[in-house]
Image (tube, rainbow, N blue to C red; front, side, top):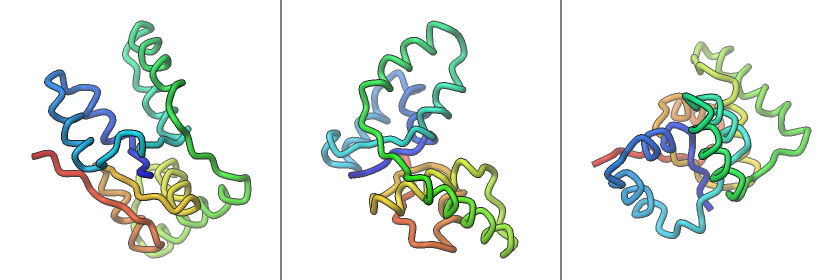
Length: 134
């Protein structure tokens, strides 16, 4: 399984040619291996530009497979943010620490286009890959 971050989905959804989707599938291998977290769902929906876009996006997102975090893992996500700050490393959003913790807890790889995850991986065992569009 591969959790796809919001940063990748935004590019895929904006790309009208479909080339980003094709590149994503080539990278993942099997589209059935793609999973989301509800944190990604939140970020995607909050970015909807109007009611029509919200409805379309919500309809698609409700059909996806999601990985959840048990309550104690939220504390670990907060600890990630704390450790980064303590070491002088900046991560723009605690949501990214939650997404990272989902991946760590479920032992899945994170595919992203957000440098914050590379920073997060410097203090924990996050399996992550930065997706470069060709």
